[in-house]
Length: 360
Image (cartoon, rainbow, N blue to C red):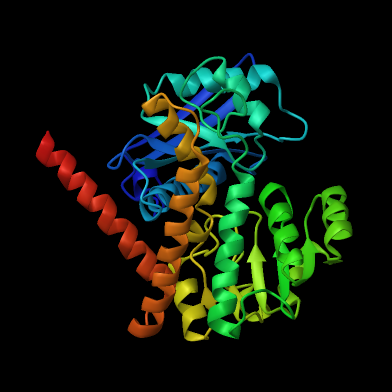
């Protein structure tokens, strides 16, 4: 199958492969859409089984960023980058400087930030070679690690679901199965435990898992056992596609609200969940807090002002309003939540593209 034949190609504007022999950099940058502005999306470093697997991942993630940025009403398009390699053993400052040079060759159509396997300090190394990176920790414009804001958005969305399904304003008495307690999942677990939830946790990083369990009182289970937990809410916060034909019958939760990207293996999975009465919170809606935080940094650069946390809070509050609108429309229109979210995103991207064509 060629790139253009792939179901994940989804009319990408550009897909760029980079290799640097000296550092061992193997990276792919996918730019899905620049209709609403420069494509912005995180950089993931993962030990993919093949380059084909990496390509599939970056295409799905890039399209998701277009939709995420549109639903959050940000003046940014969607893109994503992946670096093929083991983040625990193959990271070097030189590797990320080479990545920065690669991003710079794209001339500003794509801005990179942090994602799985990539830290604020890694992006700081890339910044030595390009200005086209975001999520920095130093300087008046810097937004820092977006993970806490991502977690805040998922947490507020979880509260919205609790109000809708259980008519309560906190999480007392609810059991939540959290898959992945890294940067975002760890912050989210802290918030949910403080709100009264009983947590069941898993992660492939046993040291981090033990730390989060100790401070939240969460129960630890093996990675594959998380699907069989008797929970009210399933919170996928690791890699995507954990909602698939192999796991659906094992998940007994009444709602799915998590931080992971691309949780649905296929759109049809979302319809199956809807038909079974499971409330699915569209991932790119509820996990949009991080990219809003990053957008605040880009805004500060454009306006030549300091980072404005109040602007970020306003945008995050509006995003949660949009999420609640999606839940209400799903109930009244008898349509799956992901289809409604997609329609909102596609309409906004299409309108921006039309405006750009008319102005050309």
